[in-house]
Image (cartoon, rainbow, N blue to C red; front, side):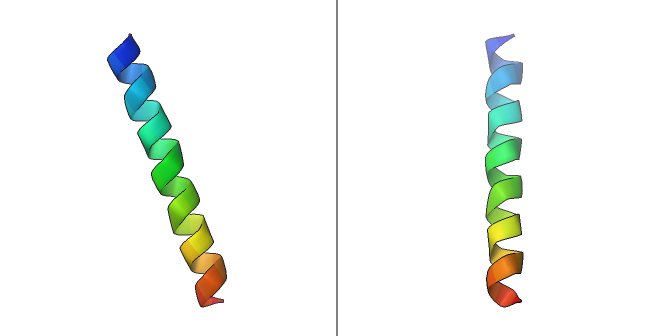
Length: 26
């Protein structure tokens, strides 16, 4: 269960990073 939660957090973090990059690129 902990592993699944950790992977979910990683996905959310990566998604946030991609969103920020897209915003920066315009």
